[in-house]
Length: 599
Image (cartoon, rainbow, N blue to C red; front, side, top):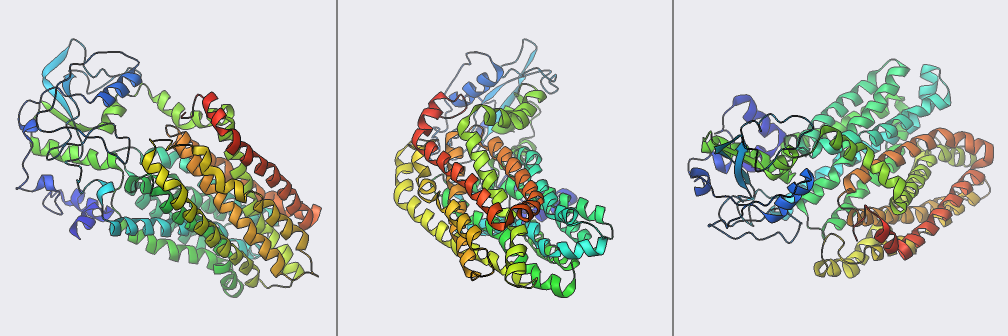
């Protein structure tokens, strides 16, 4: 119990404010803890070959570094991740201990640091990179209990649901906002569009920040969600339409870490062959959030006014933040080891010894700030421009996302104008997505368990065999998207019962869920080095398209009719369905020609 409190945001704050290591102490801070001999004596030079090659690659140098064997144990690579360092039983993983240049503490920007230093080095100073104490180190997220992992995954699901539902809770309020602020329908619709644009832009900032060891993921979650809850409260009492729109954009921006880092949080804890199950279940919270928003707020807005939807968002976000603030531990292994290195430095008390974690060492050897910016902001779009497979997944996900959000404008025209639903009832057709979600997730999990997981145990990472074969569920269901859209388009008439277009929505959602699962899994396996940047760019592109679809959907439906407008979206889905079959059939040849993909 105390471990959970210590690792949470409140536990870390208590330790910092009171500056008392004996409050919620770590093992390294207990009197019974014994420093390894390597930290109490002069360590020998030990260099992990993978780390050596990586550092040389980053520096563009080819040096030969003397290697010797660490006398207390033998390094064994993890079988769950392609770790760059080994694991030593009974001692910290001492990856490298080398002389530190006298001026290395203040490197000149743009100049790489040399791990073996120039001629002006201080021979008394050494750098020691530490890791896990053993293969079963309880601090390693991969070794946490199943119950703890489930609890963290549940928190991430609640967090994601709270953010995603915020986009559509506003939808039933649009007419009341128009009346209260005397504005046009297009202006009122910006309340949803700006929110979606905000959580598309946010991952470009929050994703790289969450990977910095000194920051970590939990700090980002707790801080931004607190701001999110405050902004939701402000949106409930705001008196200016311009301020309302600004708050809606900021809500999306500060809520976006659930898109930027939750997948990485789950990846920290689960083995690669278990991660797809968790991601599939977690994604349900993301897809259900926008669908349930109009259901949750529709009747309340009809009876209590448009501000009620903002109050509901604040009431949902505040308890979720409190839960994360009090109980969510840090999961980023680099951040955990960064803090461990700091504690060992304090315990060792040696001025000639610099303890650091592997991630900090790599960052110290990064070439320039410009290179970091290029990799984070420019490289994803370069890959989209030069790699057809990545470009296709970006376009297809944007079409699916835009189609999904266009229904917020189509539903009032169909179910209110044609079938006489009131404001509260007009949101109930979104419940059709729930059976589609259950069918899609159940089918995907069964297929993955029977066909993919056994092969992943046998094949080598990161591809784990033939990644194109993982696209089969998407290929098998890809035509369900156009079929569902055409059913909705051609049966959205007053003389046809309202249940028929709802059935079309359910069919569409099966395709929607499975397509996203397959494409995300494919990108993660084929582009492991760039996957985080590609996902951030993909999120930005599809969110921008969805924000635009909210604004152009109503004029499109008024000009072409609901049948014509949705049929147009169905035609785009047919083209995208052909692209999925092409990628499944010829994806391997594309990978072999790509300079970014794993092959």
